[in-house]
Image (cartoon, rainbow, N blue to C red; front, side, top):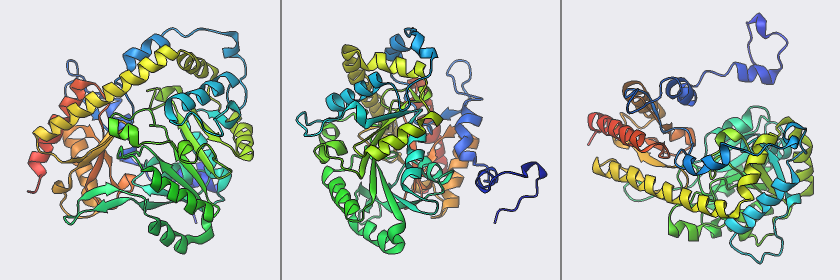
Amino acid sequence: MIMNQDPNLEGFSKNALKLINLPSNRMAAAHFTGYMNDPYDKETNPNGYISLGIAENLLSIDILREKLEHPTFKCSMIQYSEFGGSTKLKELIANLQMTRVIKNPNLSYPIEAKHVSIGAGVTPIVENIFSAFCNPGEICIIPSPFYSAFVFDAFARANVTVVPAPMEMYNDNGDIQKFSIQLDVYDNLYKQYGDKIKLIVICNPNNPTGHIIPSHEILDLIQWAKSKNIHLISDEIYALSIFTEKANQDFHSIYDIVNGNLGNNIHIISGFSKDFCMNGYRCGYAISHNPNLTQYLNMTSQFYLCSNAAQSVITSILDDKEFLDRYIKSNQNALKKQYDLTTSLLDQHNIPYLPSDSGMFFTLDLRKCLESQNVASENKIWDQLYDEYKVILSTGKGCSFEKVGYYRLIFTIKEDSIREAINRISKYYQKYCKH
């Protein structure tokens, strides 16, 4: 029962009070209260904060600038838009998927505009999907580690509980050797929760690790989910941010894996915040062959429509095939160059990390700085880095790692900032590392 002694809160719903009474989260707010108020600048503010905690890609701004600085005005941009997004943008998204993400050009069921629903970012779309498939108190399983905000997205209004399904595989020394979907984990969760499990969300490429989930593991999970009549969502928002050749060969969209036959229970979500560096434009989309889900998303999209201005700019990007090819290649090269720089700096200081193949991040291993094997000790490292060194990371436990001492590091910031950040982290590591 929520206790409310504040007369100013009289008349609020239980769900509103649940959120209002949540304790403040210093870590979640750090990028905005620390970095955005006091950002590092090599020349003008060398003692400012450096944020390695928010998945924003600042590496490809210059190439995007030609499309973003001078958008073409159309009268339709100031009029009401179609629910679920403009038909033209849906067609271009379908083409983007079929020509740049999906590898099999001869699928039985190509993606069409009618399969696409557009909204103001992936966050409201995935939150809406939680409401579509789950009643309050029901469960969504997510292979872990995973993007930490999924927990709040599910909990805030849909009151859905996220349950991690660990993917970590360890060697004899207790180090993470690889990440793998293991069906026995899902069998055990089903024994525990049964029919309360309504949804599985996978993130491939994975956030926070940059790991590519093998296609055979995804296929096994698809078959498991179908046997239990559980819907499966594939978050593929980093599909065009893969920066190693092997990972490019290994990655397959779930659309490829099922040969274009999503059926009624498999759905894809993606957007333009990550692969296209456009977090602030707020444009995401869902792809589904289930006409009932598409109808539901289109009907409710009035609550989170992507602005016409944003849709117009993105349309101009996707409709320019020469620019699109040039941008994707340039961005992937920039990701690889910055990843190599960042990891080489860590190598110079003998700071361990887990390799990555995609996205804007990898996992920093600070276990040797732990005072003890608990969350409080992991949080203390975060506090010390934030308060003493003005560096912002994401904790591993926040991303549902099984063991403490791991941190997600975003490397897609300016070169002078990443150099200074690693310099600060190395000073911390030298001071607190317990060899």
